[in-house]
Length: 81
Image 1: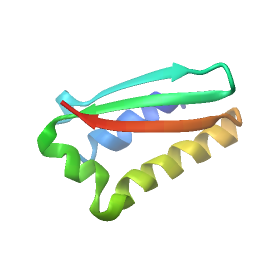
Image 2 (image 1 turned 45 degrees about the vertical axis):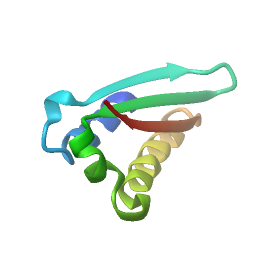
Image 3 (image 1 turned 135 degrees about the horizontal axis):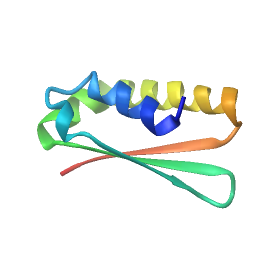
Image 4 (image 1 turned 120 degrees about the horizontal axis):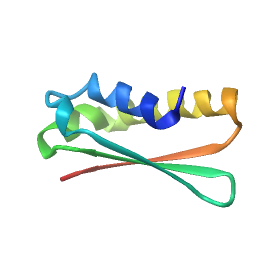
């Protein structure tokens, strides 16, 4: 599965307004993938979670999928608009 699609699936199932979620994937030259996640300001707490637990869980799942498929490091940036 595509890492951006996996991230989008996970985030869209957490937020109240799934149509406002935007996920973009960028490839770096040093075997790193950067995924930018944009959610509405109201949904930011749902994606981050208390103490960042939900965001860390999303990062862990996506990183594990990356290691199984391609062994690249993944960095996920979550921001609101």
